[in-house]
Image (tube, rainbow, N blue to C red; front, side):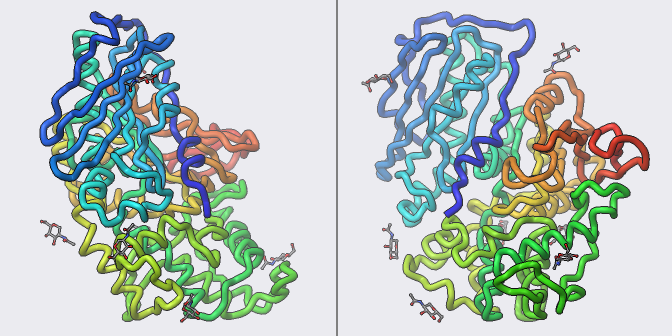
Length: 485
Ligand SMILES: *[C@@H]1O[C@H](CO)[C@@H](O)[C@H](O)[C@H]1NC(C)=O
Ligand SMILES: *[C@@H]1O[C@H](CO)[C@@H](O)[C@H](O)[C@H]1NC(C)=O
Ligand SMILES: *[C@@H]1O[C@H](CO)[C@@H](O)[C@H](O)[C@H]1NC(C)=O
Ligand SMILES: *[C@@H]1O[C@H](CO)[C@@H](O)[C@H](O)[C@H]1NC(C)=O
Ligand SMILES: *[C@@H]1O[C@H](CO)[C@@H](O)[C@H](O)[C@H]1NC(C)=O
Ligand SMILES: *[C@@H]1O[C@H](CO)[C@@H](O)[C@H](O)[C@H]1NC(C)=O
Ligand SMILES: *[C@@H]1O[C@H](CO)[C@@H](O)[C@H](O)[C@H]1NC(C)=O
Protein backbone atom coordinates (compact mmCIF):
# COMPACT_ATOMS: atom_id res chain seq x y z
CA UNK A 1 0.00 0.00 0.00
CA UNK A 2 1.18 3.48 -0.86
CA UNK A 3 1.52 5.84 2.09
CA UNK A 4 -0.33 9.09 1.55
CA UNK A 5 0.79 10.58 4.81
CA UNK A 6 4.45 11.13 4.14
CA UNK A 7 3.84 12.48 0.68
CA UNK A 8 1.15 14.84 1.90
CA UNK A 9 3.27 16.20 4.72
CA UNK A 10 6.12 16.81 2.30
CA UNK A 11 3.70 18.93 0.26
CA UNK A 12 2.78 21.18 3.17
CA UNK A 13 4.22 24.59 2.59
CA UNK A 14 5.96 26.45 5.38
CA UNK A 15 5.38 30.09 6.17
CA UNK A 16 7.45 33.16 6.99
CA UNK A 17 6.49 35.66 9.68
CA UNK A 18 4.42 38.76 8.94
CA UNK A 19 6.71 41.77 8.94
CA UNK A 20 6.47 44.19 11.83
CA UNK A 21 3.75 42.53 13.88
CA UNK A 22 4.32 40.60 17.08
CA UNK A 23 1.53 40.39 19.59
CA UNK A 24 2.01 38.96 23.08
CA UNK A 25 -0.54 37.09 25.19
CA UNK A 26 -2.71 39.07 27.60
CA UNK A 27 -3.41 36.09 29.88
CA UNK A 28 -1.46 33.03 30.98
CA UNK A 29 -1.76 29.86 28.95
CA UNK A 30 -3.17 27.83 31.82
CA UNK A 31 -6.00 30.30 32.41
CA UNK A 32 -7.56 29.71 28.96
CA UNK A 33 -11.13 28.47 29.26
CA UNK A 34 -13.14 26.19 27.01
CA UNK A 35 -14.79 28.00 24.09
CA UNK A 36 -18.38 27.20 23.19
CA UNK A 37 -19.10 25.56 19.84
CA UNK A 38 -22.65 25.57 18.46
CA UNK A 39 -23.96 22.05 17.97
CA UNK A 40 -21.23 20.47 20.07
CA UNK A 41 -20.31 20.08 23.72
CA UNK A 42 -16.74 20.81 24.71
CA UNK A 43 -15.86 18.06 27.18
CA UNK A 44 -12.39 19.21 28.21
CA UNK A 45 -9.63 21.73 27.71
CA UNK A 46 -6.01 21.33 28.72
CA UNK A 47 -3.66 24.23 28.07
CA UNK A 48 0.03 23.75 28.77
CA UNK A 49 2.81 26.32 28.42
CA UNK A 50 5.66 24.99 26.27
CA UNK A 51 8.92 26.79 25.51
CA UNK A 52 7.63 29.38 23.06
CA UNK A 53 3.99 28.50 22.69
CA UNK A 54 0.86 27.55 24.57
CA UNK A 55 -0.38 24.08 23.55
CA UNK A 56 -4.13 23.67 23.90
CA UNK A 57 -5.99 20.38 23.65
CA UNK A 58 -9.74 20.73 23.30
CA UNK A 59 -12.05 17.71 23.20
CA UNK A 60 -15.64 17.91 22.02
CA UNK A 61 -18.55 15.64 21.22
CA UNK A 62 -21.84 15.83 19.30
CA UNK A 63 -24.97 14.88 21.22
CA UNK A 64 -25.72 11.19 21.32
CA UNK A 65 -23.05 10.36 18.74
CA UNK A 66 -20.57 10.08 21.63
CA UNK A 67 -17.70 10.91 19.31
CA UNK A 68 -14.52 12.27 20.88
CA UNK A 69 -12.95 14.94 18.70
CA UNK A 70 -9.47 16.18 19.55
CA UNK A 71 -8.60 19.71 18.45
CA UNK A 72 -5.03 20.89 18.88
CA UNK A 73 -4.27 24.61 18.90
CA UNK A 74 -0.79 26.04 19.40
CA UNK A 75 -0.48 29.70 20.31
CA UNK A 76 3.00 31.26 19.98
CA UNK A 77 4.30 33.69 22.58
CA UNK A 78 5.28 36.08 19.76
CA UNK A 79 2.18 36.04 17.54
CA UNK A 80 2.11 37.37 13.98
CA UNK A 81 -1.62 38.06 14.03
CA UNK A 82 -2.55 35.11 11.84
CA UNK A 83 -4.19 31.71 12.24
CA UNK A 84 -3.25 28.70 10.11
CA UNK A 85 -5.46 25.64 9.82
CA UNK A 86 -3.62 22.50 8.72
CA UNK A 87 -5.09 19.40 7.14
CA UNK A 88 -4.70 15.66 6.91
CA UNK A 89 -3.97 12.99 4.34
CA UNK A 90 -5.64 9.83 3.10
CA UNK A 91 -8.42 8.84 5.51
CA UNK A 92 -6.85 10.89 8.30
CA UNK A 93 -8.34 14.32 9.00
CA UNK A 94 -5.25 15.55 10.83
CA UNK A 95 -4.52 15.66 14.54
CA UNK A 96 -0.76 15.33 14.65
CA UNK A 97 1.12 18.12 16.39
CA UNK A 98 3.93 17.70 13.84
CA UNK A 99 1.95 19.83 11.38
CA UNK A 100 1.89 22.70 13.90
CA UNK A 101 5.61 23.18 14.55
CA UNK A 102 6.43 25.02 11.32
CA UNK A 103 3.52 27.48 11.40
CA UNK A 104 4.09 28.23 15.09
CA UNK A 105 7.83 28.75 14.55
CA UNK A 106 6.82 31.31 11.90
CA UNK A 107 4.58 33.12 14.40
CA UNK A 108 1.21 31.73 13.39
CA UNK A 109 -1.40 30.41 15.78
CA UNK A 110 -2.14 27.01 14.27
CA UNK A 111 -4.61 24.16 14.51
CA UNK A 112 -5.30 20.60 13.51
CA UNK A 113 -7.99 18.07 14.41
CA UNK A 114 -8.37 14.30 14.31
CA UNK A 115 -12.13 14.67 13.64
CA UNK A 116 -12.72 11.99 16.27
CA UNK A 117 -11.70 9.26 13.85
CA UNK A 118 -10.24 6.02 15.12
CA UNK A 119 -6.89 5.35 13.51
CA UNK A 120 -7.59 3.75 10.13
CA UNK A 121 -5.42 4.21 7.06
CA UNK A 122 -8.32 3.58 4.68
CA UNK A 123 -11.35 4.67 6.72
CA UNK A 124 -12.76 1.14 7.06
CA UNK A 125 -13.00 1.52 10.84
CA UNK A 126 -15.42 4.48 10.64
CA UNK A 127 -17.14 4.01 7.29
CA UNK A 128 -20.47 3.07 8.90
CA UNK A 129 -20.56 5.93 11.38
CA UNK A 130 -22.67 8.87 10.20
CA UNK A 131 -21.21 11.33 12.69
CA UNK A 132 -17.62 10.40 11.89
CA UNK A 133 -18.25 10.59 8.14
CA UNK A 134 -19.71 14.05 8.70
CA UNK A 135 -16.75 15.06 10.84
CA UNK A 136 -14.34 13.94 8.12
CA UNK A 137 -16.32 15.39 5.25
CA UNK A 138 -16.61 18.95 6.56
CA UNK A 139 -17.64 19.54 10.16
CA UNK A 140 -14.45 19.04 12.14
CA UNK A 141 -12.26 21.45 10.23
CA UNK A 142 -14.90 24.14 10.65
CA UNK A 143 -15.21 23.50 14.39
CA UNK A 144 -11.44 23.46 14.73
CA UNK A 145 -11.31 26.86 13.06
CA UNK A 146 -13.95 28.30 15.40
CA UNK A 147 -12.08 26.95 18.42
CA UNK A 148 -8.75 28.27 17.11
CA UNK A 149 -10.15 31.76 16.55
CA UNK A 150 -11.90 31.83 19.94
CA UNK A 151 -8.68 30.81 21.68
CA UNK A 152 -6.65 33.52 19.95
CA UNK A 153 -9.25 36.05 21.06
CA UNK A 154 -8.90 34.97 24.67
CA UNK A 155 -5.14 34.66 24.62
CA UNK A 156 -4.12 37.77 22.70
CA UNK A 157 -7.24 39.87 23.12
CA UNK A 158 -8.08 39.74 19.43
CA UNK A 159 -9.14 37.33 16.71
CA UNK A 160 -6.68 36.64 13.90
CA UNK A 161 -6.23 39.50 11.43
CA UNK A 162 -5.88 36.90 8.70
CA UNK A 163 -6.69 33.20 8.64
CA UNK A 164 -5.20 30.71 6.20
CA UNK A 165 -5.74 27.10 5.29
CA UNK A 166 -2.73 24.97 4.39
CA UNK A 167 -3.23 21.45 3.08
CA UNK A 168 -2.31 18.90 0.46
CA UNK A 169 -4.19 15.80 -0.73
CA UNK A 170 -6.99 15.26 1.80
CA UNK A 171 -5.76 18.54 3.27
CA UNK A 172 -6.34 20.14 -0.13
CA UNK A 173 -9.87 18.78 -0.21
CA UNK A 174 -10.52 20.09 3.29
CA UNK A 175 -9.45 23.55 2.10
CA UNK A 176 -11.78 23.41 -0.87
CA UNK A 177 -14.57 22.24 1.43
CA UNK A 178 -14.05 25.30 3.65
CA UNK A 179 -14.30 27.51 0.55
CA UNK A 180 -17.53 25.80 -0.46
CA UNK A 181 -19.29 25.36 2.89
CA UNK A 182 -17.79 27.89 5.28
CA UNK A 183 -16.68 30.70 2.98
CA UNK A 184 -15.80 33.14 5.76
CA UNK A 185 -13.58 30.83 7.84
CA UNK A 186 -10.45 31.64 5.82
CA UNK A 187 -9.37 34.61 3.72
CA UNK A 188 -6.72 32.47 2.07
CA UNK A 189 -6.94 28.79 1.19
CA UNK A 190 -3.90 26.90 -0.06
CA UNK A 191 -5.10 23.59 -1.49
CA UNK A 192 -2.43 21.45 -3.14
CA UNK A 193 -3.08 18.20 -5.05
CA UNK A 194 -6.61 18.28 -3.65
CA UNK A 195 -8.70 15.12 -3.22
CA UNK A 196 -11.70 16.99 -4.64
CA UNK A 197 -14.38 15.19 -6.68
CA UNK A 198 -14.10 12.72 -3.79
CA UNK A 199 -17.19 10.74 -4.77
CA UNK A 200 -15.91 10.29 -8.33
CA UNK A 201 -12.13 10.24 -8.30
CA UNK A 202 -11.98 7.47 -5.70
CA UNK A 203 -13.94 5.16 -8.00
CA UNK A 204 -12.33 6.47 -11.20
CA UNK A 205 -8.86 5.61 -9.88
CA UNK A 206 -9.91 1.94 -9.87
CA UNK A 207 -10.56 2.03 -13.62
CA UNK A 208 -6.99 0.88 -14.45
CA UNK A 209 -7.57 -2.19 -12.25
CA UNK A 210 -10.94 -2.91 -13.82
CA UNK A 211 -9.69 -2.50 -17.39
CA UNK A 212 -6.83 -4.91 -16.80
CA UNK A 213 -9.06 -7.41 -15.01
CA UNK A 214 -11.62 -7.37 -17.81
CA UNK A 215 -9.03 -7.41 -20.61
CA UNK A 216 -7.31 -10.34 -18.89
CA UNK A 217 -3.83 -8.91 -18.41
CA UNK A 218 -2.03 -6.88 -15.79
CA UNK A 219 0.51 -5.11 -17.96
CA UNK A 220 4.03 -5.52 -16.56
CA UNK A 221 5.27 -2.39 -14.86
CA UNK A 222 8.24 -2.05 -17.20
CA UNK A 223 5.89 -2.04 -20.20
CA UNK A 224 3.78 0.69 -18.59
CA UNK A 225 6.96 2.65 -17.90
CA UNK A 226 8.14 2.20 -21.50
CA UNK A 227 4.80 3.49 -22.80
CA UNK A 228 4.79 6.44 -20.41
CA UNK A 229 8.32 7.30 -21.53
CA UNK A 230 7.30 6.93 -25.17
CA UNK A 231 4.40 9.35 -24.58
CA UNK A 232 6.76 11.85 -22.96
CA UNK A 233 9.19 11.50 -25.87
CA UNK A 234 6.37 12.00 -28.37
CA UNK A 235 4.96 15.16 -26.74
CA UNK A 236 7.98 16.65 -24.99
CA UNK A 237 8.62 19.01 -27.90
CA UNK A 238 5.00 20.24 -28.18
CA UNK A 239 5.91 23.24 -26.01
CA UNK A 240 8.93 24.12 -28.12
CA UNK A 241 11.52 22.76 -25.70
CA UNK A 242 12.74 19.22 -25.06
CA UNK A 243 13.08 19.09 -21.30
CA UNK A 244 11.68 15.64 -20.51
CA UNK A 245 8.26 17.03 -19.60
CA UNK A 246 4.84 17.27 -21.23
CA UNK A 247 3.51 20.77 -20.53
CA UNK A 248 -0.06 19.90 -21.44
CA UNK A 249 -0.97 16.20 -21.52
CA UNK A 250 -4.45 17.13 -22.76
CA UNK A 251 -3.08 18.18 -26.15
CA UNK A 252 -0.55 15.34 -26.38
CA UNK A 253 -1.25 13.24 -29.45
CA UNK A 254 0.30 9.94 -28.50
CA UNK A 255 -1.16 6.67 -29.66
CA UNK A 256 0.25 3.60 -27.94
CA UNK A 257 -1.13 1.53 -30.83
CA UNK A 258 1.60 2.97 -33.07
CA UNK A 259 4.19 1.02 -31.05
CA UNK A 260 2.53 -2.40 -31.28
CA UNK A 261 5.04 -5.03 -32.36
CA UNK A 262 8.00 -2.92 -31.27
CA UNK A 263 10.44 -3.83 -28.52
CA UNK A 264 9.07 -3.15 -25.03
CA UNK A 265 12.57 -3.16 -23.58
CA UNK A 266 11.14 -5.40 -20.90
CA UNK A 267 12.23 -8.98 -20.37
CA UNK A 268 8.82 -10.08 -19.04
CA UNK A 269 7.15 -9.02 -22.26
CA UNK A 270 9.68 -8.31 -25.03
CA UNK A 271 7.24 -7.10 -27.70
CA UNK A 272 4.46 -4.58 -27.14
CA UNK A 273 1.10 -6.23 -27.86
CA UNK A 274 -2.13 -4.73 -29.18
CA UNK A 275 -3.84 -5.62 -25.91
CA UNK A 276 -1.24 -3.76 -23.87
CA UNK A 277 -1.61 -0.71 -26.10
CA UNK A 278 -5.39 -0.86 -25.75
CA UNK A 279 -5.19 -1.05 -21.95
CA UNK A 280 -2.76 1.87 -21.79
CA UNK A 281 -5.00 3.97 -24.01
CA UNK A 282 -8.08 3.18 -21.96
CA UNK A 283 -6.35 4.12 -18.69
CA UNK A 284 -5.23 7.45 -20.17
CA UNK A 285 -8.71 8.13 -21.56
CA UNK A 286 -10.48 7.42 -18.28
CA UNK A 287 -13.58 5.49 -17.26
CA UNK A 288 -16.53 5.19 -19.64
CA UNK A 289 -20.07 3.87 -19.44
CA UNK A 290 -21.33 1.06 -21.67
CA UNK A 291 -22.09 3.56 -24.45
CA UNK A 292 -18.56 4.91 -24.34
CA UNK A 293 -19.46 8.18 -22.61
CA UNK A 294 -16.65 9.41 -20.44
CA UNK A 295 -17.44 9.34 -16.70
CA UNK A 296 -14.39 11.14 -15.34
CA UNK A 297 -10.94 12.39 -16.28
CA UNK A 298 -8.37 9.85 -17.31
CA UNK A 299 -4.81 9.64 -16.05
CA UNK A 300 -2.74 12.30 -17.84
CA UNK A 301 -0.04 11.00 -20.19
CA UNK A 302 3.33 11.09 -18.48
CA UNK A 303 1.94 9.97 -15.11
CA UNK A 304 3.74 6.94 -13.62
CA UNK A 305 1.17 4.12 -13.59
CA UNK A 306 2.90 1.71 -11.22
CA UNK A 307 0.54 2.54 -8.33
CA UNK A 308 -2.89 2.88 -9.91
CA UNK A 309 -2.42 0.18 -12.57
CA UNK A 310 -0.98 -2.38 -10.18
CA UNK A 311 -2.61 -5.64 -9.13
CA UNK A 312 -3.30 -4.02 -5.74
CA UNK A 313 -4.53 -0.43 -6.13
CA UNK A 314 -4.25 1.94 -3.15
CA UNK A 315 -6.35 0.74 -0.22
CA UNK A 316 -7.89 4.19 0.20
CA UNK A 317 -9.74 3.64 -3.09
CA UNK A 318 -10.52 -0.04 -2.74
CA UNK A 319 -11.82 0.64 0.77
CA UNK A 320 -13.96 3.47 -0.55
CA UNK A 321 -15.81 1.16 -2.89
CA UNK A 322 -16.05 -1.75 -0.45
CA UNK A 323 -16.77 0.04 2.83
CA UNK A 324 -18.30 3.39 1.94
CA UNK A 325 -20.20 2.73 -1.28
CA UNK A 326 -21.15 -0.98 -1.37
CA UNK A 327 -20.83 -1.60 2.37
CA UNK A 328 -19.48 -5.05 1.67
CA UNK A 329 -16.04 -5.21 3.28
CA UNK A 330 -15.31 -8.52 1.54
CA UNK A 331 -16.45 -7.39 -1.89
CA UNK A 332 -14.26 -8.93 -4.60
CA UNK A 333 -13.13 -6.10 -6.89
CA UNK A 334 -12.04 -8.60 -9.51
CA UNK A 335 -15.70 -9.23 -10.27
CA UNK A 336 -16.28 -5.66 -11.50
CA UNK A 337 -17.05 -5.47 -15.22
CA UNK A 338 -17.55 -2.71 -17.81
CA UNK A 339 -21.29 -3.07 -17.04
CA UNK A 340 -21.06 -2.87 -13.25
CA UNK A 341 -18.33 -0.23 -13.01
CA UNK A 342 -20.60 2.66 -14.15
CA UNK A 343 -23.22 1.52 -11.62
CA UNK A 344 -20.75 1.63 -8.75
CA UNK A 345 -19.53 5.00 -10.01
CA UNK A 346 -23.10 6.34 -10.02
CA UNK A 347 -23.87 4.85 -6.61
CA UNK A 348 -20.90 6.69 -5.16
CA UNK A 349 -22.23 9.94 -6.67
CA UNK A 350 -25.75 9.31 -5.38
CA UNK A 351 -24.52 8.60 -1.86
CA UNK A 352 -21.74 11.16 -1.51
CA UNK A 353 -21.74 13.85 -4.18
CA UNK A 354 -23.47 16.54 -2.17
CA UNK A 355 -22.01 15.32 1.09
CA UNK A 356 -18.28 15.02 0.51
CA UNK A 357 -17.79 15.41 -3.25
CA UNK A 358 -16.19 18.83 -2.64
CA UNK A 359 -16.84 19.97 -6.19
CA UNK A 360 -19.46 22.68 -5.73
CA UNK A 361 -18.71 25.17 -8.49
CA UNK A 362 -20.61 28.16 -7.09
CA UNK A 363 -17.94 29.91 -5.07
CA UNK A 364 -19.68 33.28 -5.04
CA UNK A 365 -19.94 33.50 -1.23
CA UNK A 366 -16.21 32.97 -0.86
CA UNK A 367 -15.50 35.45 -3.62
CA UNK A 368 -17.72 38.16 -2.19
CA UNK A 369 -16.16 37.64 1.25
CA UNK A 370 -12.84 38.54 -0.41
CA UNK A 371 -11.37 35.04 -0.15
CA UNK A 372 -8.50 33.78 -2.30
CA UNK A 373 -7.98 30.15 -3.29
CA UNK A 374 -4.57 29.07 -4.52
CA UNK A 375 -4.31 25.54 -5.82
CA UNK A 376 -1.70 23.55 -7.66
CA UNK A 377 -1.64 19.96 -8.85
CA UNK A 378 1.08 17.79 -10.38
CA UNK A 379 0.22 16.67 -13.90
CA UNK A 380 2.01 13.39 -13.07
CA UNK A 381 0.19 12.75 -9.78
CA UNK A 382 0.26 8.97 -9.49
CA UNK A 383 -2.42 8.80 -6.76
CA UNK A 384 -4.97 11.57 -7.41
CA UNK A 385 -4.83 12.15 -11.16
CA UNK A 386 -3.99 15.82 -11.79
CA UNK A 387 -6.71 16.38 -14.36
CA UNK A 388 -9.41 16.31 -11.67
CA UNK A 389 -8.21 19.79 -10.72
CA UNK A 390 -8.38 20.93 -14.35
CA UNK A 391 -11.87 19.48 -14.64
CA UNK A 392 -13.01 21.30 -11.48
CA UNK A 393 -11.46 24.61 -12.49
CA UNK A 394 -13.18 24.39 -15.92
CA UNK A 395 -16.49 23.64 -14.18
CA UNK A 396 -16.02 26.67 -11.89
CA UNK A 397 -15.21 28.82 -14.94
CA UNK A 398 -18.42 27.66 -16.60
CA UNK A 399 -20.43 28.55 -13.48
CA UNK A 400 -18.69 31.79 -12.61
CA UNK A 401 -18.15 33.78 -15.76
CA UNK A 402 -15.02 32.44 -17.39
CA UNK A 403 -11.30 32.18 -16.74
CA UNK A 404 -10.54 35.87 -16.21
CA UNK A 405 -13.33 36.29 -13.65
CA UNK A 406 -12.33 33.18 -11.75
CA UNK A 407 -8.69 34.29 -11.72
CA UNK A 408 -9.74 37.18 -9.51
CA UNK A 409 -10.11 34.79 -6.58
CA UNK A 410 -9.15 31.23 -7.59
CA UNK A 411 -5.92 30.36 -9.36
CA UNK A 412 -4.80 26.89 -10.35
CA UNK A 413 -1.23 26.07 -11.33
CA UNK A 414 -0.60 22.76 -13.06
CA UNK A 415 2.89 21.39 -12.47
CA UNK A 416 4.13 19.25 -15.40
CA UNK A 417 5.87 16.04 -14.31
CA UNK A 418 5.17 16.51 -10.57
CA UNK A 419 3.78 13.63 -8.50
CA UNK A 420 1.42 13.68 -5.49
CA UNK A 421 2.09 16.77 -3.34
CA UNK A 422 5.78 16.67 -4.34
CA UNK A 423 8.28 14.44 -6.10
CA UNK A 424 8.51 13.35 -9.71
CA UNK A 425 10.84 14.75 -12.35
CA UNK A 426 9.01 18.07 -12.72
CA UNK A 427 9.48 21.41 -10.97
CA UNK A 428 7.71 21.62 -7.58
CA UNK A 429 6.41 25.01 -6.33
CA UNK A 430 8.92 26.44 -3.87
CA UNK A 431 6.92 28.85 -1.72
CA UNK A 432 3.28 28.70 -2.81
CA UNK A 433 1.84 29.38 0.65
CA UNK A 434 3.57 32.75 0.90
CA UNK A 435 2.41 33.58 -2.61
CA UNK A 436 -1.11 33.17 -1.22
CA UNK A 437 -0.34 35.33 1.83
CA UNK A 438 0.98 38.10 -0.42
CA UNK A 439 -2.13 37.82 -2.58
CA UNK A 440 -4.48 38.14 0.41
CA UNK A 441 -2.57 40.82 2.30
CA UNK A 442 -0.96 42.87 -0.47
CA UNK A 443 -3.26 42.13 -3.37
CA UNK A 444 -0.39 40.76 -5.44
CA UNK A 445 -2.15 38.00 -7.36
CA UNK A 446 0.39 35.35 -8.39
CA UNK A 447 0.77 35.12 -12.18
CA UNK A 448 3.25 32.28 -11.89
CA UNK A 449 4.63 30.06 -9.13
CA UNK A 450 8.39 29.73 -8.85
CA UNK A 451 9.27 26.03 -8.95
CA UNK A 452 12.33 23.82 -8.94
CA UNK A 453 13.03 20.30 -10.17
CA UNK A 454 15.06 17.86 -8.12
CA UNK A 455 17.84 18.05 -10.72
CA UNK A 456 18.01 21.81 -10.16
CA UNK A 457 16.16 23.21 -13.19
CA UNK A 458 13.66 25.99 -12.56
CA UNK A 459 10.28 26.97 -14.00
CA UNK A 460 7.70 29.63 -13.32
CA UNK A 461 4.56 27.52 -13.39
CA UNK A 462 1.69 29.03 -15.33
CA UNK A 463 -1.78 29.66 -14.04
CA UNK A 464 -4.41 27.61 -15.78
CA UNK A 465 -5.40 27.78 -18.64
CA UNK A 466 -1.97 29.11 -19.63
CA UNK A 467 0.83 26.65 -20.18
CA UNK A 468 4.60 26.72 -20.40
CA UNK A 469 6.32 27.38 -23.73
CA UNK A 470 10.03 27.55 -24.45
CA UNK A 471 10.99 30.96 -25.83
CA UNK A 472 13.32 29.30 -28.33
CA UNK A 473 16.53 30.62 -26.86
CA UNK A 474 18.39 30.52 -23.58
CA UNK A 475 19.19 27.79 -21.08
CA UNK A 476 16.39 25.26 -21.26
CA UNK A 477 16.87 24.57 -17.52
CA UNK A 478 16.23 28.18 -16.55
CA UNK A 479 12.77 29.54 -15.78
CA UNK A 480 13.59 32.72 -17.70
CA UNK A 481 13.76 30.77 -20.96
CA UNK A 482 10.10 29.82 -20.65
CA UNK A 483 6.94 31.84 -20.95
CA UNK A 484 3.23 31.24 -20.36
CA UNK A 485 0.96 31.12 -23.41
C1 LIG B 1 -2.33 18.22 29.67
O1 LIG B 1 -1.34 18.29 28.64
C2 LIG B 1 -0.02 17.99 29.13
C3 LIG B 1 0.96 18.26 28.01
O2 LIG B 1 0.58 17.59 26.85
C4 LIG B 1 0.01 16.56 29.63
O3 LIG B 1 1.29 16.28 30.14
C5 LIG B 1 -1.02 16.37 30.72
O4 LIG B 1 -1.08 15.03 31.08
C6 LIG B 1 -2.40 16.83 30.22
N1 LIG B 1 -3.33 16.79 31.33
C7 LIG B 1 -4.53 16.24 31.24
C8 LIG B 1 -5.37 16.34 32.43
O5 LIG B 1 -4.90 15.69 30.21
C1 LIG C 1 -20.05 -1.82 8.30
O1 LIG C 1 -21.28 -2.35 7.83
C2 LIG C 1 -21.15 -3.48 6.99
C3 LIG C 1 -22.52 -3.83 6.44
O2 LIG C 1 -23.42 -3.99 7.48
C4 LIG C 1 -20.50 -4.60 7.79
O3 LIG C 1 -20.33 -5.73 6.97
C5 LIG C 1 -19.15 -4.12 8.28
O4 LIG C 1 -18.54 -5.11 9.07
C6 LIG C 1 -19.28 -2.85 9.11
N1 LIG C 1 -17.95 -2.35 9.40
C7 LIG C 1 -17.55 -2.12 10.66
C8 LIG C 1 -16.15 -1.59 10.82
O5 LIG C 1 -18.25 -2.30 11.60
C1 LIG D 1 12.93 0.56 -26.51
O1 LIG D 1 14.22 1.16 -26.52
C2 LIG D 1 14.60 1.68 -27.78
C3 LIG D 1 16.03 2.15 -27.69
O2 LIG D 1 16.22 2.94 -26.55
C4 LIG D 1 13.64 2.80 -28.16
O3 LIG D 1 13.95 3.32 -29.44
C5 LIG D 1 12.21 2.26 -28.18
O4 LIG D 1 11.28 3.31 -28.44
C6 LIG D 1 11.87 1.60 -26.85
N1 LIG D 1 10.55 1.01 -26.93
C7 LIG D 1 9.52 1.45 -26.20
C8 LIG D 1 8.22 0.73 -26.37
O5 LIG D 1 9.61 2.38 -25.41
C1 LIG E 1 -9.14 16.98 -18.43
O1 LIG E 1 -10.22 17.85 -18.14
C2 LIG E 1 -10.63 18.60 -19.23
C3 LIG E 1 -11.68 19.57 -18.74
O2 LIG E 1 -12.77 18.89 -18.17
C4 LIG E 1 -11.15 17.66 -20.32
O3 LIG E 1 -11.51 18.40 -21.46
C5 LIG E 1 -10.06 16.66 -20.68
O4 LIG E 1 -10.57 15.69 -21.58
C6 LIG E 1 -9.58 15.95 -19.45
N1 LIG E 1 -8.46 15.08 -19.75
C7 LIG E 1 -8.47 13.79 -19.51
C8 LIG E 1 -7.20 13.04 -19.76
O5 LIG E 1 -9.45 13.20 -19.09
C1 LIG F 1 -12.60 -12.86 -7.09
O1 LIG F 1 -13.25 -12.91 -8.33
C2 LIG F 1 -12.45 -13.49 -9.36
C3 LIG F 1 -13.21 -13.31 -10.68
O2 LIG F 1 -14.48 -13.82 -10.57
C4 LIG F 1 -12.16 -14.93 -9.01
O3 LIG F 1 -11.33 -15.48 -10.01
C5 LIG F 1 -11.43 -14.97 -7.68
O4 LIG F 1 -11.25 -16.32 -7.28
C6 LIG F 1 -12.25 -14.25 -6.62
N1 LIG F 1 -11.44 -14.17 -5.41
C7 LIG F 1 -11.92 -14.55 -4.25
C8 LIG F 1 -11.01 -14.39 -3.08
O5 LIG F 1 -13.04 -15.03 -4.13
C1 LIG G 1 -27.17 17.55 -5.12
O1 LIG G 1 -27.95 18.68 -4.73
C2 LIG G 1 -28.52 19.36 -5.83
C3 LIG G 1 -29.17 20.64 -5.31
O2 LIG G 1 -29.92 20.36 -4.18
C4 LIG G 1 -29.50 18.44 -6.54
O3 LIG G 1 -30.08 19.09 -7.65
C5 LIG G 1 -28.75 17.20 -7.03
O4 LIG G 1 -29.65 16.29 -7.59
C6 LIG G 1 -28.02 16.54 -5.89
N1 LIG G 1 -27.17 15.50 -6.44
C7 LIG G 1 -27.13 14.29 -5.95
C8 LIG G 1 -26.26 13.31 -6.66
O5 LIG G 1 -27.75 13.97 -4.96
C1 LIG H 1 3.59 43.23 1.35
O1 LIG H 1 4.33 44.29 0.77
C2 LIG H 1 5.27 44.88 1.67
C3 LIG H 1 5.86 46.08 0.97
O2 LIG H 1 6.37 45.71 -0.29
C4 LIG H 1 6.32 43.85 2.05
O3 LIG H 1 7.22 44.39 2.96
C5 LIG H 1 5.61 42.66 2.69
O4 LIG H 1 6.55 41.64 2.93
C6 LIG H 1 4.52 42.13 1.79
N1 LIG H 1 3.77 41.12 2.52
C7 LIG H 1 3.64 39.90 2.10
C8 LIG H 1 2.84 39.01 2.95
O5 LIG H 1 4.13 39.50 1.05
